[in-house]
Length: 287
Ligand code: AMP
Image (tube, rainbow, N blue to C red; front, side, top):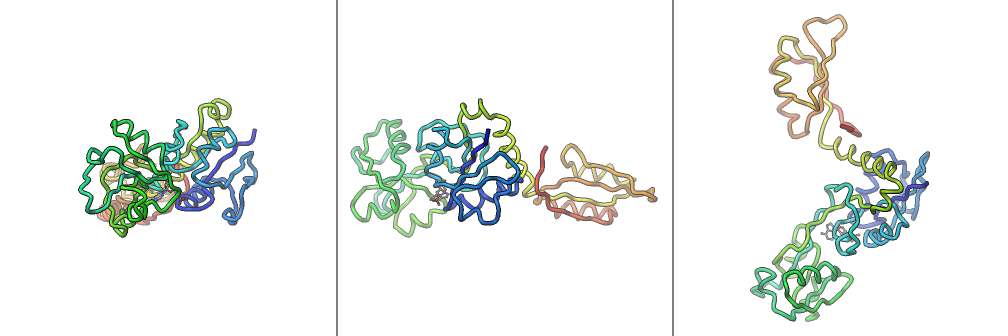
């Protein structure tokens, strides 16, 4: 049974999604950007390139087994898809933004009957229903920021990451309705039918993310200083210690270190007389 994976064909999430698949070992080729679908070489897997907004519908209907898209799109769809892996990119928030001089500080201050322009009508409606406030939702498909200026709406609900677009349009973020990032999503039905291949893909992607931001560190350490090394280089389940042929007073230590800790780790190793210190990037890390 072929496993079908959908990733965004363009836009903010596209390049990183394709990069994760290829680093995970699924060969989608160099020219993936010009294709609509790709047969992954040597595997019973198809990758489909579609719009991020359409992915929840394709996954819900079963046309696709797993999809990578923004959780904002999943939330808007209301399909209750299963998030099996959050991917830590495409971070943004779906926020209520109001004109600078409006005096609105939170959703409490939004007047009954206010017009809210958004391309996320479902999330917006659910939110205002949940706080018991009746508002008029104006559904648009883009450029929400211009709507208050045009007089089409009083405020907007839109995606924000840095807030600079809001500022340029004299809008201010008044409340966050939803925090989003990219994720791997599927359905219970797909999991029931294809659990093994689905989890293999998710685990492979996780191993890529886990390997990023860490390095493989090797060093020759004086045997009598090993107790100190174990303290400052805990590694995954402790460092691997190997004998060096023909040398008695040194051992080779191999350990995985977070990038943020690498500078100190190398300085500490040098202080205790370690030699041959070498760091390597890793492609994947399966713990
Ligand atoms: P696209 O419109 O194809 O570039 O991608 C839209 C998706 O990118 C959204 O659904 C979000 O999940 C994600 N995203 C991340 N940051 C932003 C942002 N500042 N504005 C819009 N979408 C964002």
